[in-house]
Structures are given as C-alpha cells and as structure tokens.
Length: 448
Image 1 (cartoon, one colour):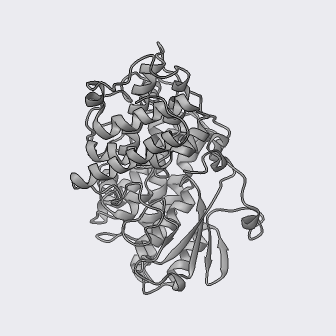
Image 2 (cartoon, helix red, strand yellow; image 1 turned 90 degrees about the vertical axis):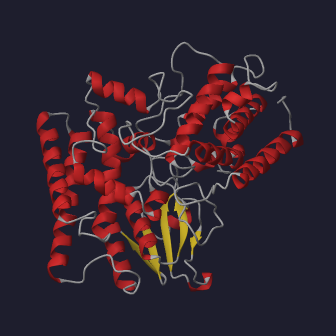
Image 3 (cartoon, rainbow, N blue to C red; image 1 turned 180 degrees about the vertical axis):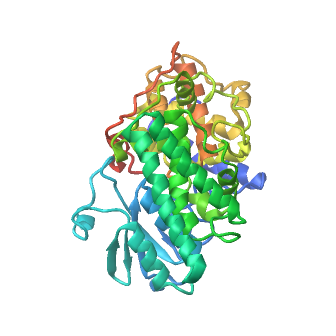
C-alpha cells in the first residue's frame, strides 16, 4: 500500500469500503445488528446511536416527538429518555446537541431553552426539559405504547420507592467519586448497592419489578452503567462481575435487549467523559486501583495489544466478543469516518496511509497482512503519523462510533500500527483533559 494523494487516496477508501461489505456478506455477518454502529438512514430495525429518526413502521409525517440529546451519548439523563422511547417503540426524531463540556450549543436550541438543558423533548410542539418530567409526560402521552410505569396500587408504590432508591444510589456514588475519598463514603455507597442488590433479588427478577422491564430499570440503567465503569477505574472496586450477584444478573438481562445494546457505552468512554461533567473524580490511589486504571487505559502494555484475549464474564470489563464481526465493524466505522478521523487527529498524507493500513489489517487480519508483500513495517510511513493513530485510539467513543467490542479491536490495531511506525519504549498518547473535552467538539470531526 503505497502513499497516494487526492483522488487516488479516495479510491483506496472506496475499495476498502467495498471489500468490507463483501467480506461481511460472504461470511453472513450483519454490520448493523443491534448494538453495532448502525446506519443513520435506518428508520426501522435495530436501534443505533447513528439514526436521525425512528419510525417503528409508522409514517414519518406522523412522528409527534423530537428528542434533543447529546451528540456523543454521554449524558445519563438523555440515556434514560432514549431507552424509554426505544422500549415503548414511540416514533421520534433526534436532534443532537453539544454538552457544555465538549462544545457550544446551537443558537436555535438556546432559543428554546436559555439554560441549554439536556435532554429536551417536543411532544406535539410542546417543549419540555428535565428528564423526570419528560419521562412522566411520555408515559401519559402514549398510554397504549407498552406502559412502563404501573398506574397505581402496590406496584406503583414499589416503583416509587425504587426510584427513590436510585436517587440514593446516585447520590452516594457521586459523594464517593467526586466528594471525598474516605471509608465513610465507601461504606455509604456499598450500603446503597447492598440494598439495590437485595430488592433485585427479592423481586423474582430479572428486573426490578419482576419478569418485565419497567421505568425503574430504564432509570437505573444509566446510573449503574456509569457506576460500574467509574468505581472500578477510580476506586478499584468491581461492580460488574463483583459480589452483587442480583445486579450482575440484571446487567445480563439488560444487555440482551436491543434497546440497551444500542445505547450502552464502555468503561473507557465513561471514565473520561465523566470528570468534566461532574467536576472531577477522586482516585483512591491504591496500587490495585492504579493497575486497573492503567489496564482500562491500555497503558499496562497488555490490554490493548494484539492478539487480544477473548472476553469473559471475569474480564476487567466483562463482555462477549465476536472477533471477526468486531473487526469488520471497526473497519467499517474507520472507513466511513476517515475524513473526520484525519481532521480531528490533524493527520496528513502519512497519517491517512497509516489509517488505511489499520483498516486493511482489520479487514484481513493483521497476521495475514504481515505475511503478505504489502506488510506494514518501519520506514513505510513517517513516524510522526503515530501521533494521529494514538490520538484517535484514546478518543474512540462508544456507542457514538461503534460497539465496545469493535472499539476494543480498533484501539488494539491502532496501537499495533503506531508501535511499528513510531515505536516508543513507554506508553504514548495525548492526555485526556479532566476539566474539558473540547478535543471532542463535533466541529473537529464533522464527517463522523
């Protein structure tokens, strides 16, 4: 793969795109199944972070709802509303708005809400903010679309108590994560999690109100997902895969649902999107916590290196991977977004060539590529291109860009290529800010 410019380079990307699609078809793999990157134009079918409108078989002209959510799927409150709409299969349009921590909000949105609050919803032209108000209004406005909140009686009382418990869990989590590193804060958090585990176990499960998913599960989903990532990374305590058995079973049930697969992020994305949102996170500083953080950041010299070990329930971030499909999804996303990737990483012709090598390795397998005459080796690409690869490696966003398992493959392949063309004795990367994520402002990756 020689360095090419202009139309020739565009031709390489087009050929890669065609080959990825052909490989998926020949192997019977669906690049756009639930939880994968998906297509912006897919109004029906599996949910995706990419789509602009969901119709669930209705006519677009009959869509009554507009959801205003953040561009990158970082906002926990947007996550709840998004999940609710998907579970109830309410047709809706999507307007993506920047969070303050990574970009400026559009003037047209600020004209609707001067505070720029997210999420926001329009139902039949009525504009609403505050996630709890929005979710209640959705239930009231669409009573025939699978009710998620009991209308009354003991079940409604239980739902209200559980929603109050979620606020307690959320509060103790934030206190320990950003307020104080103390045995008292840890104890309060663990007590709240113990109670959550107890009520889940007593419900008959797998969900909070029993066999069927409810609004309680939707609300807990965004919180527990972020808790599992941040408490492991900053405190060294396992939530997912840890001692809370009913919570682990609940995660398994949630991850079997198409709606959750499409909206779920990964640990690396959350631990770096949370600090600027909540005002910083306090690391415990123990040897165990530092080792876990290094592994989740790929700085341990193993976690983001090829060949990747299979994911299991005992992995630091538990999961189920499908390496061939994961690689093709990652390749598809990289090829589809290559213009934005180059723009955001400030890469030139050499970086473009390096990214093309990565896409080729994802497509055919890095070992097969390295056994071919076209293998990547030192001297083929300017070593400076490694900076662009590493910058991108550390800023892949799940689910905005792709699924966790695909992101895992892409991070490792970017690492592989960077280490060949620009080897360094220690981990190299561009540090991610704890106070602002303007590196992720959409103006820097418009094509993504």
